[in-house]
Length: 376
Image (cartoon, rainbow, N blue to C red; front, side):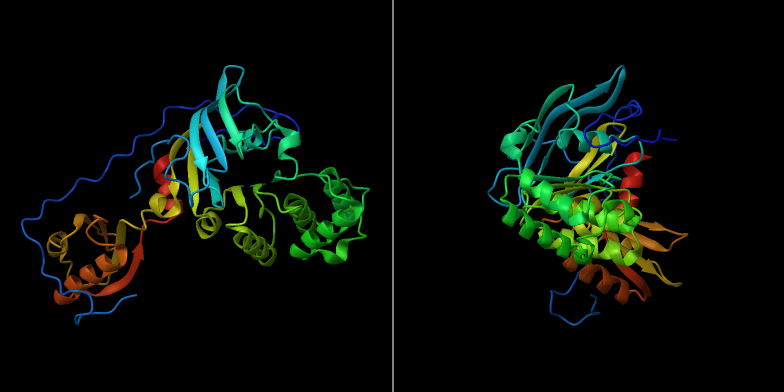
């Protein structure tokens, strides 16, 4: 069992170090099949049934393919190590966060997520390696003022301050005039559906209300980079949904880094992610690459024939296996020959021709399953 990862309060180091890392697990590729012949599939548009593996990414160099556009990466980590005494909490992490992306930090307790988050936020300094936020060190407070917003997990608000006064004060610390600070505070409070709390003291807010005020302060001034640690933890479904919509609305305008244990939520809102395990990055890349949604499909069959050999002969198929308990055919394919939608068409045609009954079709394995494979 992983040692629980202690959270670092804002402005201070974690109360206890994380578990020491072990070597990153190797993920072996599935064995490829060698079909003797290819099944004949009619071209797209011909009559037939209608239907609606990511390898661990190599840690790249600066200005890598992870960019969503021609801009440099918003966050760049190079060979970052963080030690607490003899314990290595983060071990030689190198990754980039594309500008304008929503990037997930994923991993079990003790994986190094909170330590990584704390270094990005400037709460902790790395033992070795380099971190750049908008091409500046996290410690360059004056240069990054107003450019980076942070929501630590379970951040405490000043109990005696009224919500409006608190947000205005933080906006003024960014260099805004009193008038502009009030406008900015009203705007973000409205965005989190808390306009009515302006004169409410922070100490009287419920957990969900306090969480949204914390989110509002992270959004003040439309920062270019926003770091969110467990932003929906403890929120009811309706409020959590609203937070996800806020994150989605910021995509492209800001770069958002989200640390969370809610993998279903991260799969929904993130376009890139990194999976950490015991301080090591075991995979990172686009969400499509991590979930293999662009190179793998799964077909669930009802009782009846399972024409597995015929599926293996389809042009572009690299592997095909059948799981008897779930009655699911798992198919990987060469994306240079066909995309996922075309492969679904080819596979369903062959299954239809051989009287197989299809119960369901999905692309990839889902983020939760992928993370379980990488961190077991």
